[in-house]
Image 1 (cartoon, rainbow, N blue to C red):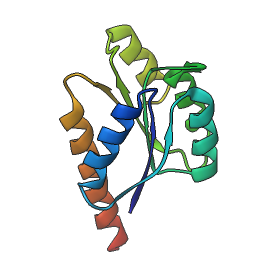
Image 2 (cartoon, one colour; image 1 turned 30 degrees about the vertical axis):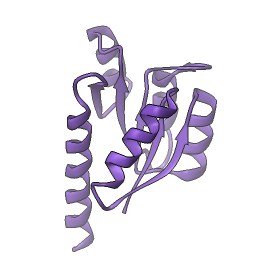
Image 3 (cartoon, rainbow, N blue to C red; image 1 turned 180 degrees about the vertical axis):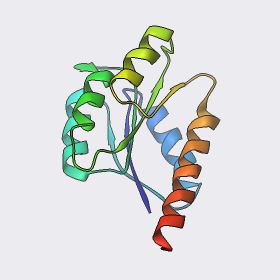
Image 4 (cartoon, rainbow, N blue to C red; image 1 turned 135 degrees about the vertical axis):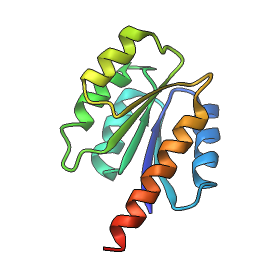
Length: 128
């Protein structure tokens, strides 16, 4: 089971993403956060395998949360999912340790594809 935390200031986006991820099978959305403070708290408490972070959220930035998450042991894989896919934002997030960076308006299928790949790898590793 792949444990995922979703952090986005839009409840609609969180719920839509949750349903799409759960429909893949093998995914458990262990938490949802609407702001940076809640995202940090839930990530530390729940220790997800994957965190999907919005870049712009109340009380800070998903990029700030990214830095904190990459200090956790074990560090979750981080997917940045934003309406602000500008090259400077992409570079900053990748430089700070984001594993993936996707545009909300055009790349939702890429998020699902990446999660499916993670599930395949996890399944292969659990058979050894």
